[in-house]
Every structure is written in structure tokens, then in C-alpha cells.
Length: 121
Length: 114
Image 1 (cartoon, rainbow over the protein chains, first blue to last red):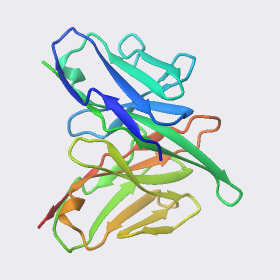
Image 2 (image 1 turned 180 degrees about the vertical axis):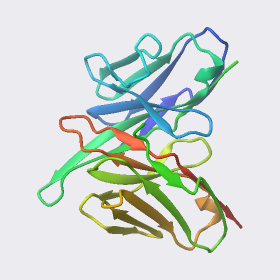
Image 3 (image 1 turned 90 degrees about the vertical axis):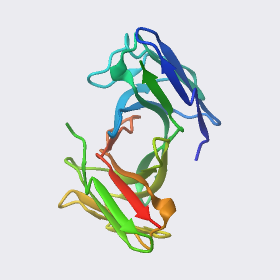
Image 4 (image 1 turned 45 degrees about the vertical axis):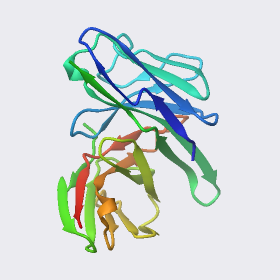
């Protein structure tokens, strides 16, 4: 599986500011995703980061609030813009892997970075 | 919401006991995966079971899948204090094309008392 790192690991930010989170993978991957995990909750997919084109956002998430870059196959950034306390969450990037076999067909799975814990005051 | 449901929400057991967590989902799937998350950190992939499989083992982990009931269970045998974590199921709903989105369950918080 790929080795995934995220920076920063945590941050405390003021309301109204923006934070950019970086995700670096040690190998080229096609699929990269960004998730949000609010306190005590499960993971919610924010968007799929597409290399060389605009990210694909899930319902409830918009580009103006969560702009995403994917300049190459090993790196992506997520910006949390104009933050409010409700944005306090763990933000996680993941990479998708796909392998196929004659017996099992297509199998997809994801591996996650260590997460960025964001607190907005 | 397509999010899966897990139960129990929280489980506390003694070291050496077995822990069973259940996951239910709503749509047909390509596969189901279980992840562990230690105290607000990243997720660790534990095991994957395909829709045409009924049971799978990996070390002290045993996963079952019942597609007719749209449910799965994760059994951890001979639990250890280090197993204390949140456990999430996630389903791959088999979208065509290049996207392999996962839908995560609500999670079970497991506490193993030494």
C-alpha cells in the first residue's frame, strides 16, 4: 500500500481565515479523495481530487468553500476557506487502488493519510 | 443518506474476550471493507470481503457478509488493550468507470479493558 503523509498534522485557526492541507503520496496514484470527520462522527466524502481537472464535489460541499488542487499524481491540497467553528474536524486524504483479476474482477480499496486535526476558534 | 449503520455504537470488554461489531448497508455492493481508527488519527485498512464471499479471516479477525440481509460482522478474537479503537465498515457500491467511492458506516467505539 502507498505511504501517505499530510501536513499539518493539526492546527488551531481563527474564524474567517483559511487553511491549506497538503497530502503527499510516495507513488503515483490515479484516485485521491478528501474526507471530513466531524467530532465523534464517521467520515464524509468531500470530493474526489482529479489530476489536471476540477475536483468532483459531493452534495453539500462546494468549490468556493473547499478548493482542491491536484497538480500531479502524487500530491493534492485541500483548502478550508473562511473558516468557522463548525469547520472544526479531522480532514483526511485517501488514495484509491484498483486491482483486477480474472477470478474476482475489479476490487477497489482506499488507504488513508494520518489526518489533519483542525480547530477553529 | 446512504450511510451504513453500525452497532453497537460503543462496546466495552475485558482483555481476552471476543468483540463482535455489526454493519448494515442499504444498496447492493461490490465489496465491504473494515477500517480501524485509533483516537482521531488516520484509518488503517483491516480487511476486505467481496460481495461473492461469505466469510474471511485475517489473523484474529473474522468477517462475515450476508448480502441478502445487507449486513456484515467483524469479530475480533482474544482481544487486547491495543485493539481499543473505533471500527468502521465501508462499502464500495460498484460504480462504473474510474470512481471507487466508499460509503462509511457510523462506527463502533471499542474499549478493551486490561
